Image (cartoon, rainbow, N blue to C red; front, top):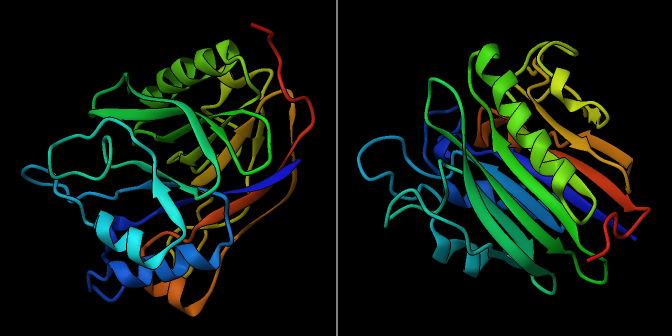
Length: 237
């Protein structure tokens, strides 16, 4: 009843050496041994926001498939720069994107997934804003969707929060988990990448994936968590 979820801000596949190299990003993703991976900054920032991480490369180099979700533009991989990878053999029962309030254009992804051999889980993947006043509003939106979920819910992503406590007031009664410093990747001190779990889910283990390649591939290190599904369905339908 356990699956591994990860989150990784790709920095548009531009590493700390200034080189854009999607292949080494995928090498890091493969090394995570995850069942589900939430990605941020998968598209370039300007123009039509074309994909920085090619879908064809994901198909060729990994055992993941890309969740069928809204795209920011016709050449984009993600919705507001975000995408979700699910290891082949798992199922996606539902998926959509929604806008988040705030000064900057931000959005989040919501999926009902079934990692291979496990019951449904509601996943919200998010890359939150730079201002705490915006993040508080964004958490109110995310928390409401987690409370309404029919399957046990979790949120994961780059939350852009340096504080261990401030800004998360809307998350009662959910549990906030901080795997460790993940930013900047060369000398990580910021715990910006985190996850939140609701009733029915338990974090068994978690951590930050740190390797020489990961420190070059992006300005963030990926985080991961092994999640146990303790109560398969919260609301019957």
